[in-house]
Image (cartoon, rainbow, N blue to C red):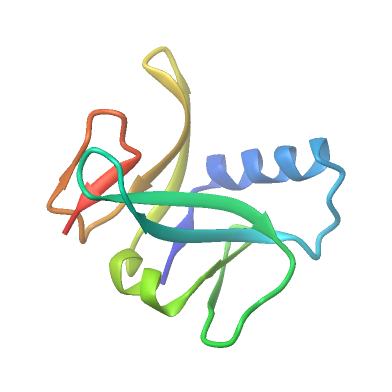
Amino acid sequence: MITATPKAALRVAELRQEAELDNQYFIRVAVEGGGCSGLSYKLDFDNEERQGDQAFESNGVKIVVDMKSFLYLCGTELDFTDGLNGKGFNFINPNATRTCGCGESFAV
């Protein structure tokens, strides 16, 4: 399962409204090769599920991930930070053995 904190869910709703997207749009999370640690997170809006996708609902946010990425992301929590040390989405991934300083890439 992939979950979203209440703060992340609120930010997703704000971004959806700013982009004038209706509720058919969900968050698609994926893992791609690259970044400081070897793998990087990708987060975007989408409105089409694909064969093999895994879908989860958390705090009113629909999160969809392809099966290959899910193997790296199982148990991950999506959070949002707007503090002094930076602003943006954070992935709290229990499968990551190391992450880079920016938090956008990881290794397993």
